[in-house]
Image (cartoon, rainbow, N blue to C red; front, side, top):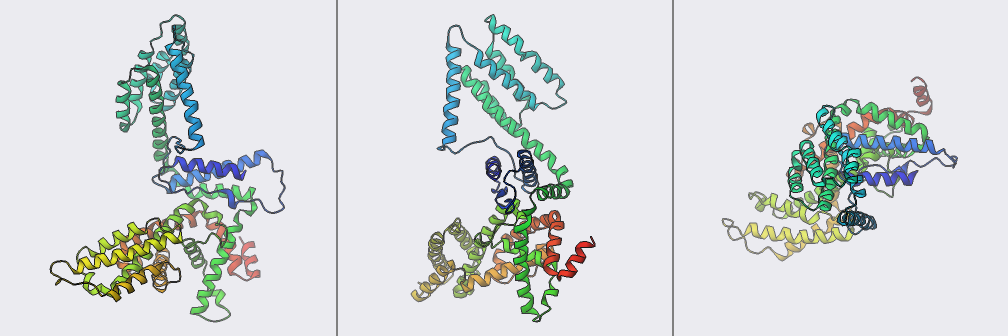
Length: 493
């Protein structure tokens, strides 16, 4: 069950266009310890179908760029090689049949039937006349009679098929249709017809998805909540990781509350909303070694991981800006275009450096050299009095400070990280980045990117809370209320 769902998720990830790989794996939905090992196949398939529907619906709703593409395995993969061999063998067989004397059309008839079926699947209810023409021209019994009497006009049928495709395809496929009209060799023509039909099928699926999205949005919360409840009914342990995630957030929030208001009753000061916000903030600095990902956020894990990576890059950029300003801010930061150029260089050098510590160290070392080069150029610009060479001591100090940003406990990186976390938390509490407090230096220099990130993060959090709020409530009651009060609150529902 778990393996099959992981494979299904992988297939859907390959089908999505630029879709951060964001569909959940049932790795976190393990059966509870001691559960019967002989669950019925039908119930497992029902659970898999339920999770699949939930994942797909969620992806369509939250990923505006979501679309399907024809499967395209990696070029050098075993799957790709096997696919190429099988397809080539088929088309070689078709060419051999059509080249024989007299021609053999058994393969061609199979292809024509499949073409007809595909074209019918692209028809809308209003295409009554076109459907009638398809039945008339691609009448397989009549075509078989033409084959038997040696009167089959394959090029004529191909021309009708191409004209039908032209009337059904999206404008973006017009170049492919024009290319089909230029082909004369029958095997190549049929092969290209099938390729373009595959693209048209994907276009139709994506058009349907876009058409359904507004209707799905109206029912999204209830639908996802219902589907997750069905999963929970079949897998009672499906909230274990979520409970552990909220418990860790409550402990963190309690520690913060005790710092602000020392006393034994600090627990009573905790608000469920504050704990939930703290929990979501933890997802932006998630340690995979800490615990398994909460089940209720699995469908957005890839999106949140992507936001976390963007956040870390912004923190490093802002840290480098702060260090540079501490040395040369009054001199170069007022120059037109300096900050933008420095930010572009930092983003280019730091891109992709989050995966390995060695890559980050190398990127920061290069960034230190780039910063010094751009500062030197800015100071030497006309109207700056020549500037002269920077003192070697200042160069070494700044280069070393930027290089040290690779450490998680670096004081500058920690300071910027806390300020960014405060901004995002204020965004969650206020509901809009526009109502967040004014950003201190140097976060104001990256305010546009930070606001965009905060908006995307807030959208995910608010939708998740709308869907899974009823599942979070009993967990939070047990965490925040004394045992007797929690049971009474649960019983009064």
